Image (cartoon, rainbow, N blue to C red; front, side, top):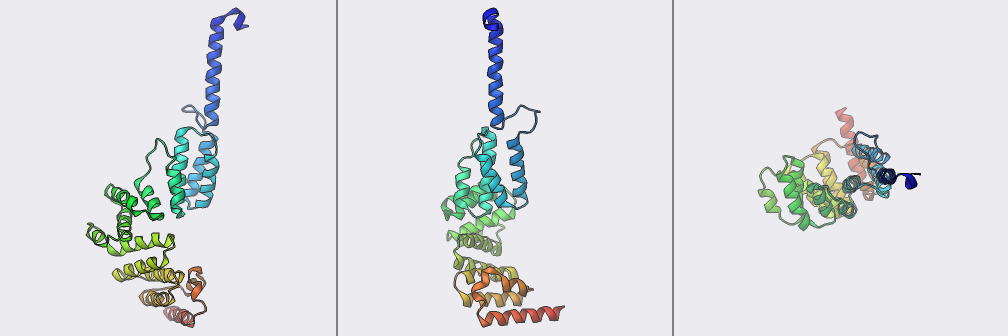
Amino acid sequence: IALFQDPLLMLILGLNVVRAMVNISGYFRGQLPPNGPTHPFEIAFLQAEAKYKEGKLEEAASLLKAIAEQDLQPQLRARVHDLAGWAAVKQGEGRVALDHFAQVQGLAVAPQALAAAFSLIGDETRALPLWEQAARASNDPTLLHEWGGALIRDGQVDKARGVPGMKPALAWAAAARTWFVRQDFVRAGEANETSFRAEPNPERAYDAACAFALGARPEDALRMLQAAGATGAVRAEKAQWDPELVSLRTDPRFTAWLETLRLQNRTAS
């Protein structure tokens, strides 16, 4: 009717149809007008974020993957890939994390996230300036010692020692964690042992033993288990069934060490 009777009305109607189509398209991409209802994609993202904060990384990653497959508005897509990258870093998947971070458009990725991803794939050359940037921009001691750990893995031990506020025990422990995730178990064991020598505690010695056991170094593993038991309390039940120590279970020296732990626990109680 408008077409034949009122061209101006037809123009107004056409403009409203176009606007409606734009709004419908925006809705399906996760974009809603301000003060409007929360979009289902946004709700799903918030659920994934909650799972991430709870430490349920696999569930978070699964949700984020499903969301990323949708036609999202750019800002939400950037947030989805950023969080998915963080989840991948926490799971030790450096390459997956970098793939996600590469798809973050219009949003700055935290330098420590990129640094961790590069360290996980063994690219300390790219990781080091990012760790330094993150550490210098923050008073967080964790970032400081992650930078130290990266320097150690890159062979720059003296430089790590010279960084103000750097504690050798924590820097070597940081180096060990990434080596362990990369399944370089012997280096992880040696780094944990160095950390233990700098600042003795049973957890560090136990970590060294686990890494040595996985790296087919049973003598070193048993030696560090002895050091752990001599330094502080170690639960015999945990050690007996620890999958990382499975290679030692048939060794009579391991059995004897467990019995010593049980005797110490009974005496202490």
